[in-house]
Length: 324
Image (cartoon, rainbow, N blue to C red):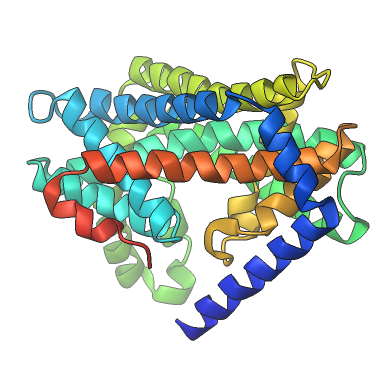
């Protein structure tokens, strides 16, 4: 806990340095000039969360929870993620707990949550690969960061290949890896662990492999959800009078998607998100202060939507959404 507090304090120091370098007055002026864009960002992000909630509802066993009930749980989980600075590490289990409390079997809840998160991450990985590829060619990042970024891109390629393999073959993502440890664990022990892992992966594989039409529908919806995030970037840039191209918001969105992975140890990616946004936006020819403004406004709209999540959360979950 002490280490986490120290990292959070350092993150705020980094953010303060960034704001000082960019000019607090300039950031405030950019926010003022954006006008009603913040309200649109809140609406678009709410729609983004609702669309991901709809995906969960479509893949849950029918007749147990209504769409409004699922959306309440999804927004409540967003509140947990934002207000505890824990990201998906607490939000996803909390989401599963709320579904179980709502009458969904644990295996079904775990399978659908994993399926939604996996497909969301798959689309995000492909957008990130495209965005990071463009940004590396433009020299957006310091030379010292290029090797780690190339390693990250390789991991994204392997992840994409693994999900495609699982979807086409019906073979789990983890089970083959466990069986590959046979020389270390021994044949009998490795097989016993593999069987337990396979039983846990079975609900996910039923969705990933067993229903191709539903998988295509889900990937389409996830792409639309990501498009809403790109749209809010386009709206902000346009409101500031910047000549933004159709591809620019996707490049920015693709570039920032790796932040949660690269800076997972920083609570809320405070400071890190603002710095990376500044680098990416500058590489595209826009003022770096616009990138910091984008990050701060996105942070504010996420907290606004999290507050909505607290308001609509099932009564038994509200205590878990308090800030850490």
